[in-house]
Amino acid sequence: MLGEGAHRLDELARSGREDGDMGIITRGFGGRREPEAAALPPGQYLTRDFPVLTAGPTQYVDTADWSFTITTETGDRTTWSWADLMALTSEDIETDIHCVTRWSKLGTRWHGVPVDTVLEHIETAADYLMAHSYGGYTTNLPLEDVLDGKAWLAYGYADGPLPVEHGGPLRLLVPHLYFWKSAKWLNGFTLLTSDEPGFWEGFGYHNHGDPWREERYDGD
Amino acid sequence: MTETPLRDRGKVGGPRPRWLPARLAGLRSETGTARTMTFDVPEWPGHQAGQHVDLRLTAADGYSTERSYSIAAPAEDARVSITVQEVGTGEVSPYLVENMELGDALEMRGPIGGWFVWSPSPEAPVEQPILLVAGGSGVVPLMAMVRERARSGSRAPFRLVYSVRDPGQVLFAPELAQHAQDEGVQVDLVYSRETPKDFARPAGRITARDLATPPDAGWPDDPPPRAYVCGPTAFVEHAIRTLLDLGYTNHNIRAERFGPSGG
Image 1 (cartoon, one colour):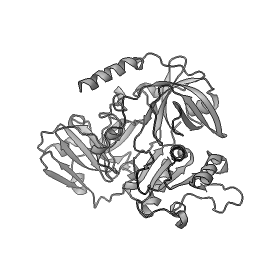
Image 2 (cartoon, chains in turn purple, blue):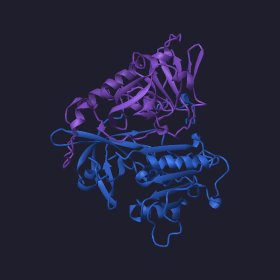
Image 3 (cartoon, chains in turn cyan, yellow):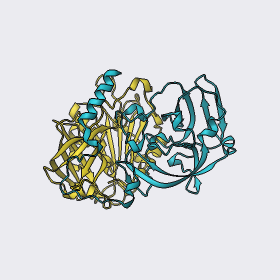
Image 4 (cartoon, helix red, strand yellow):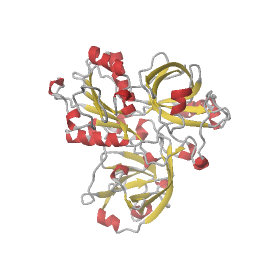
């Protein structure tokens, strides 16, 4: 581990100009600055569309068959049906979202249940969770990134239900991290005492994914 | 969606992908609005077919912006080729397609993406048949796979179903014909709006008939084929639904989508 750290410092030193010094100038490139660009994390551009990015097929899950299960590090399981989840206090969320493929979308409106609510009565000593989705997708998060009003189980988008291509009936919403952490078609959390990489994290994407620190790829 | 347990895969990202200087060393027009650009990247670490790169362009006043593009071909002497389709309203693609000249420089980092990749498996007793489904410029990473197959001498059964709006939009047409003739890659074009004269299939979007394995393809029953689908979001969603109806599953479909905002 020591060796790895030393290697990374070395790499950082060699690519030190990333912190503001100007790189190579591309002759003839003028660019077109968007007025809202100031509100964007580094390396992002604004989109007014809502692009869809998914590793595999869209999952079609009927709410009648849907359930959400939290499994603790000791194997205890708590399951919510769709009706159980709808009975929980929900709220409106207005937030910016940032995808690692470089688009950002400002002022998106969602509706859902805070992750705090479903974790409230779960007994755990875990520091991490693995989010699981219908279709097999996974993504890992520290618990501190989903507690204290930072993440939601979202089932509404704009003024309607969350469309299936965007993860409906329900997805995780963790807007302060790159959007691959906001797992579509969510169906559970596994609580973990030690961190493990999820799907994209195992393919070289950053373990944490903070857009403001531009944590795109492993080692950033 | 995972085909192998997470723990067996390890990290494919390797060392931190750094921004590398890249100089434009080759240009080829593909259509009126697309061209292939080959960059000299002296420190390039190599890549797999299907991966992409990030480009960073910096204006004289220090303003810079970044975009991702699919790599179009296997690496050759630290050269990286991308094929860029101009998006009229884009900030970057019009510059790349219209203005950038040989010798001009930008920064590149990668390769990126370890999921939407194909590599030959010469040790397999029967190589897995591969169905490539392209919508428009989504053909680029799939072309990288076709080229990698030829470069490596793989005999994996390959079929490309390539949907374009009209005959003027076909990328890589002569080379695809060559791969079909010399390498046994089956190439089927589908025109969604307008066909060439005397083309048997009427214009229209891709159907189950287009994607079903032809009876004379000679594909083995086992292993089942894997499909790679790349194109605009709506195209990919439609193609995937069609493949699921044909018996493909979550486990043997890999997809890459791009939104209308690219470029």
